[in-house]
Length: 147
Image (tube, rainbow, N blue to C red; front, top):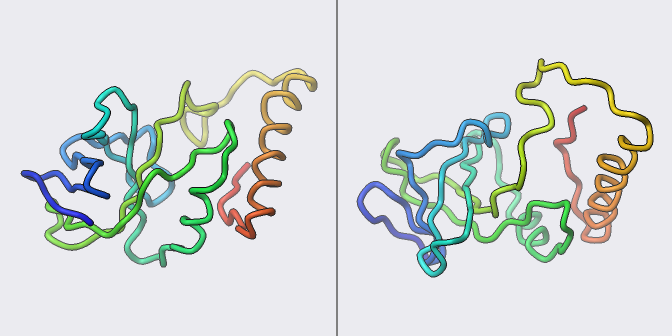
């Protein structure tokens, strides 16, 4: 069930998505990120993505992702279609736990110092492979892996 409190949208009677608090550092392509308050646990650190309205939301895939338990994977906490007051229309929204740490690349064109091979394998490839295996076991295709 969804609702609105002031300008905020409520997802699953628990998560308050704040349209006045965008989080551009967590945007994913055309999906825009916003701060979220957990009404049952205000200490939770969450955010929401509002996917592009022009692209179909893969609800079956999102529900399968909820069941994946992997420390290297951002699991959706809740999702729904809400009344999004800034646009005066309904929008899909997905709530996630906020990732710990900073982005590896601040921007897509940012340069970083090369990693030693063992660090690259340990810090990126092994976690990525474990997530891809979990996605495979769940019969979900990622469709958004970018170098």
